[in-house]
Structures are given as structure tokens and as C-alpha cells.
Length: 307
Ligand code: CP
Ligand code: NVA
Image 1 (cartoon, rainbow, N blue to C red):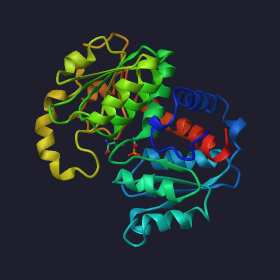
Image 2 (cartoon, rainbow, N blue to C red; image 1 turned 60 degrees about the vertical axis):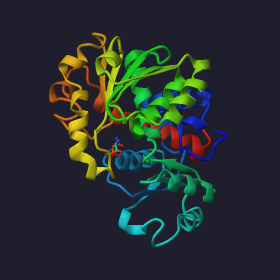
Image 3 (cartoon, rainbow, N blue to C red; image 1 turned 120 degrees about the horizontal axis):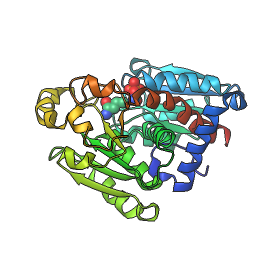
């Protein structure tokens, strides 16, 4: 990989993203083949927000590649307050071979990347969630057997998860239809970028306020929480605004009969999706969660082990 960091899918070419997905598939099928490739290497995991999947999959993933992790809680380093972000990066680069960070501000992850000579991997910011989208497209490839030309409908908040799905759609030739309430559309600069750079892969990005229109003929229906971490003060307002965007059985039935249901988790059952949809036989939410492990092992292998 030419890149040092994995901070956004968009800074990787279509071929590089495809290589990472193929590597993830191989790692998933042949884990023993990769069990020693990061022997003795340390991954610092910086968390400014809570996590189940990101923490466990990076921790287990680095162990399964022969390395080990160090968990740094929000209180531990108090990024930017106890010590500047640049100084944290310049310390850690002398001690560990990789840094994973989940931060509020995207600028913090970028700053870590620009000051540390070791790879920095984005574990979610207010802007995007690239490891999640890599696991999601790996999952879609497994269940749909292809990515180019499939239709993915994203219903709900045009948030960090939506941004990474858009970046990935452009690189992988996916038709993405996004339904949000007015004022909650995904970042317009990201949509414009994907429309310009997705031409060569055949990607299209359609924005609508009508969930039924977005899910029509979709191969997969994706939703995420209405209130992301850090937006808790808005949650009462968001509950009202997003109510018509709930993925229930009726909305899900408007997608293709073989459509799968996707969610990055954690889910707020009864809000953005009903129990019936989350528990449906066509729900792949736990396959997505497992694929975080394989996708991130591929990213760590590529950046920390030159695979
Ligand atoms: N999907 C996801 O990133 O989950 P966590 O917040 O639990 O890490
Ligand atoms: N959009 C959610 C994703 C959680 C994995 C959040 O940022 O809280």
C-alpha cells in the first residue's frame, strides 16, 4: 500500500479497496496463514467514545496476527487536554507499530496521522467510519456474490456511517440510494465527490426524502441510529423527525424479495428498525459485526505488515 494511514476509503484507489476486500476474504478463509505476520507488533487503541465491536475486533484481530494491543480509555490520555494530539502521536510512534483511534473530531485522527510515522487507523469519527464500510462491503460481496451494479438503500441519518458507505460505493461501483429527512442529508461535498469519482466504476448516488423510493428494487437496506454518539442532547428532537424513516417490515418488503437488512450496530430496536426486521432471516447484522474482524485484520496486515 502506498498510504501510511487508513483514515478514509476515499484516499484509496478502487484497486486498493478491492485488494483489501480480497485480502480480508483470504484472511477469513485461511486465518492460520496470517497468524504470525505482525509478530510482536503493538497497536495502541485510543478511544474517546464507547465501543463494543471496534474495541473487540481490533484487539482480537491484532492478537490473531501475532501482535498485541494496548487499550487507552478516554480518561487515560485525555487527548488534546492532558497533552497535545501531536505530542501523543510523537510519543506513541516510538513505542508502538500502529495506532487505532476513535475520536469525536475527525481532525484529531488526521492530526495523529500527520504527526506519527506509524500507521493510523480510523475507528470512527464525527465525519466517517471507514472500517465499518469495509466490513459492510465485504458482507455484501459474500451474500450478493458481487458489488458492482448492486443497489444499496440507506435510510435514516446522513451520518458518519453514510459518508463511508458513499466513499465505498464510488470505489466499488455500487448504486446507493439515500433517504433522509430534510436537513439530515449526507455531507454534500462527499456526495459531489462520489458522483464525480464514481463515474469510472459505474456508481450512482441518489438522494431522496422518501424511504419507499430509496428501498425500491434494493438488494440491501441499511440503517443506523438516529442519534449518534455526541449528539445525545438532540435525541428527543431526532426521535420525532426520524420516525417516518423507521425500517419496519412494510418498508423492508418494498425492497427486492432477496434483499438483506444491514445495520452497523448498536441498534436502538423500535427506533430506526423494528425487532422483526433485525431478527428477520434476511438480516445480516451479526455477519457485518464479525466481518469487522476480518476487514480490519486485512487493513492492519496491509499497513503494519506490507501485505
Ligand atoms: N459498529 C461499531 O463501530 O460498533 P461499536 O461502536 O460497538 O464499536
Ligand atoms: N453513527 C453511529 C455509529 C456507531 C457505530 C455513531 O456515531 O454513534
